[in-house]
Image (cartoon, rainbow, N blue to C red):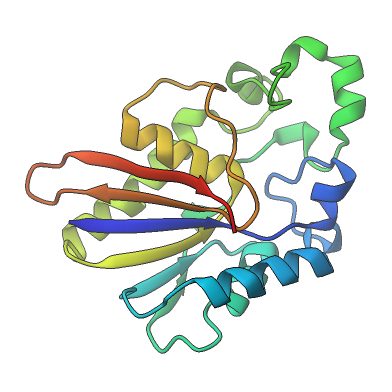
Length: 204
């Protein structure tokens, strides 16, 4: 089996301010002191021994998190742009609260996430587009490293889409984004191609 563990980055200043990050990569999207403590705590809990390799989103918040997680890891750590957060188009860097006031039907009332159909209308990426790039990463791992255990450091909507991909589920808001530093485990059988979502958003 190819096992992929997905860890979301730690808390950022944008998270605390209710700012939509998407692929924004400025100081507001860097880890807060709380986010650094979360990464340290996950590092203490996470046994790195089983991992054959680590893949990381190029966005600074993911890179910061990965440095904490892999502080004493001797295996390969690779940056892959396909693991970036989804693009939010013209809403990148804007406050969710203000957008909710202006466009209340664009958000799910429970999760407060932007509805999938809205993303493409504001110049962002659709769930399908995100899943296409994630599917490439997963397929390459299954073909090139069929029996490895891989750690991926990525983002909320990205990991959510990886989970939906495992379930072959349609674009939906029913599955909330994973929390900061949570762990999601997926496996793929390299022989049959069967995909499994073993766990989702296990807290730090």
